[in-house]
Image 1: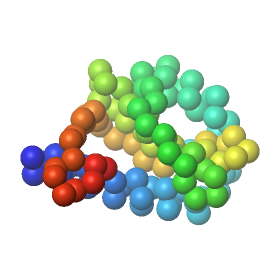
Image 2: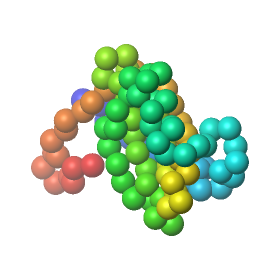
Image 3: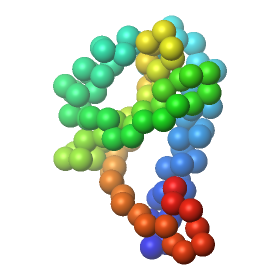
Image 4: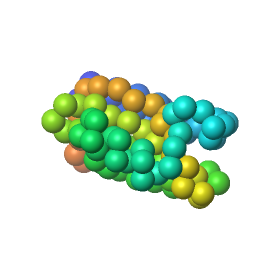
Length: 107
């Protein structure tokens, strides 16, 4: 249970840091491209598919892509013009289904 809570809190913290960092990035950097190209690359090269999605500041879409087979994962931020930037990636992705403990809200 402690490991799961640590993993979950680490993931949420990483998402916050990653999205904050992405907002300040220039879309001309190498880790950005048109959405269709980026998604095709994640699917073809890493076998990753979208696992979660949310709306960030300035109407930017934050998504987590992962491969349940290989465990690789990538966090992207897409701005309203369709430019998608990779903000974090890694390995050992695990899909969690956690139930809220009485008195706590589910994350």
